[in-house]
Image 1 (tube, one colour):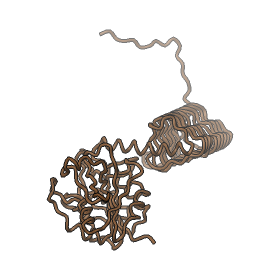
Image 2 (spheres, one colour):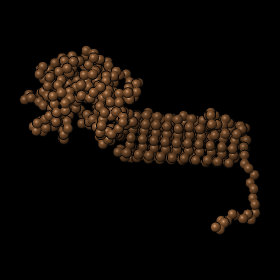
Image 3 (tube, helix red, strand yellow):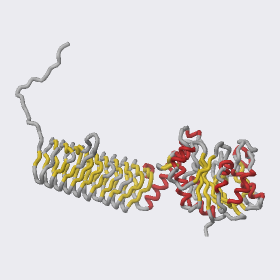
Image 4 (tube, helix red, strand yellow):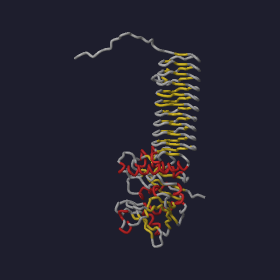
Length: 456
């Protein structure tokens, strides 16, 4: 049976080197705050309670995490990691405690599960990492038996200790009783004048409690963020890992280094994605979908055998399949394309149902409208859906032909099989199979002299 688990996430730091007014842990990776990544991973461990220690920007963090199932502990003064963890002591249960960091967003659940498996009254868990360049990290000191007995911070380390390549990640797990015994004993007698959480390792060794170590599958799992450069590096590491997963699933990427997924992307067989595409929220691409370069797709489903040409923006849209979209199309929320519908270049849609086989080929705006089957909307057509106060609906029946440069003033219905002549402004309903034309009479003046510039 799983032991009762408390997760404590340290998120009180200011992040001075980020040079931002926003708390460091709220900076986004793959479109989501770093601390939200940590919370999502922690949730996979099914903890009894999750505690977030906040300090700098506490109100911003409370607001950002208002929908999360967490409790907050406040670190009023920044006195180190040990002092931060101590702020959550009174909220802990009697089981296991896992310490995580809000600025270490790529930690994996499998790594943490392996760490937690070591914890009992005679053992604690410590996550370490071996680095080619350990500069800046606390070093793991082991005794002659190879057991971890202490962590020495870089500023307090001797030359011999600085030569150690096994480093502390800060992530550790122990029983609640152990943590409650050790934290009150911490001292700030060190180069930083802070209470180091890492000092509990020496306390454990002194009590005869074995410190069991684990290492992550990839070093990037335990990388923290202190500046914009590190943020960018972790972003690319995340995207590279995800791109590799997509390719393993059979997705063809023109360049894995030029893909950004800020949410979830599900793909059928034989999907091709060109360079520079961004996927946000929940996106599903059906079998055989081809996405051209520099497209942005948000919270949308693109059905099988559809093509999205370059520089198209698709948001909260459902395309049934065999659709042609773009280039340079903008499909706004509420757009629904039936099978074989086409939305071409420089077309904008919003809250529009486009029927099977219907086409809006270019340079048009269709909003708050429903198009039947096999409708043809000519270039420059506008559904005038807004009267300055309210939105109104346009209904276009099956097999309607709308000529170029027409304005359909909603609310209006164009009956089945009707034709709207080019350049018309339609403000009244059009009967089925009728021709509706509204044009001014063309005038012509023979031998008309053009104006000429007046000499100054």
